[in-house]
Image (cartoon, rainbow, N blue to C red; front, side):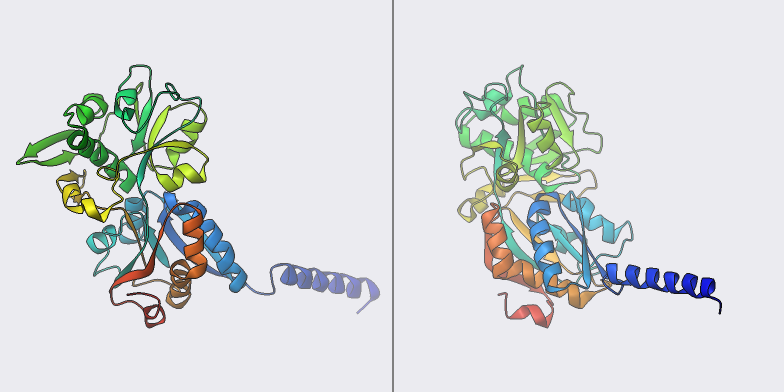
Length: 335
């Protein structure tokens, strides 16, 4: 081997070694997590903590409306390690028993009406008049798609419950029925709201987007004055918000029976019943890395994850509640 050949060989070897070291010396394991959009900031923090404990793992977060997140596994055919949703009942109704064996309830939330100081009538809106403010012709408001996102179907639920609470039977009609293709029917004091695939919102007053976090930028940039959001989303994005009475904000177990009087039938024919907001998480049956996935879930439901949810306005359920055949490694952390 002459000197030139040796130097070339040495240089290539050195380059390969440097590349190997820069990549950590190995290919990382990808842990795929499909999650509700409202978990984005919380899960970003949990991802960082998990990767510090597992430097050989790359957590890949993918946020959607919760219905869409579930469908990545059940319909699209993607392989996911963890699925976390803003309505726990989506897991038993859409994933058990064919796509998952268990689920955990791990956090709570509540509905609010988010806005900024620049929103129309921001100096007048409060917990008693918010629905009149939204009905003003100069005000633009929005919520997420009921067919894709729990915050979306919870928004008309809140408005229907508001009719019952404020004794005003025109709230849902003015804010949704008159402004879109959504309809409602009542029988014996129970209300079923129908959300067709083509929602046809009025482009001036009412906007509907795929998931609730899509509305945040619209409110921040002035494209909307108000949006129905989770309290955590409003707090995490420094939005002002109207706190709603517990009788309508879907936060309280004390009002669970009253909430049940309102249901939403989405475009796929599924019926969602109004109930307190509770998040759910599972590991799909065909998860590529079930043991690592269980470790990620353990981080969510133990002190490190609980502190994140507390800080970001999503009160954790302590201990988390388990349903179905949860992995043995999680059993000591749940009830």
